[in-house]
Length: 118
Image (cartoon, rainbow, N blue to C red; front, top):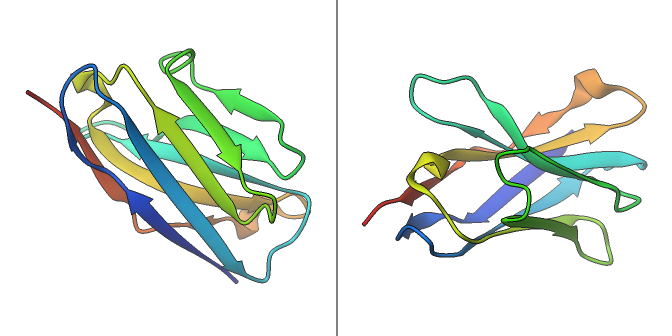
């Protein structure tokens, strides 16, 4: 079992910046992928960005050039830096962990609200 604790989020004005962090603990398997997903009201949950324990990254087209995902040297904390935020970035953001030996054993954080509004 892997536990995920998220931090960051909040209210930001359009064009502003925000960072989200997620720390994993428990029975962490490597290799793995950690990622941020988001879900806006009435919409499906979608991938924002992900990073493997080998630091390979993947970004949704909607955030390319505006977001950077990274992991610390222990590979247990992941950070998503977002800039040029738009109202359509408003959503609940969820941290996700997937061990590469069994994707069905993935874990989710509780979610953190990001609201982009003036």
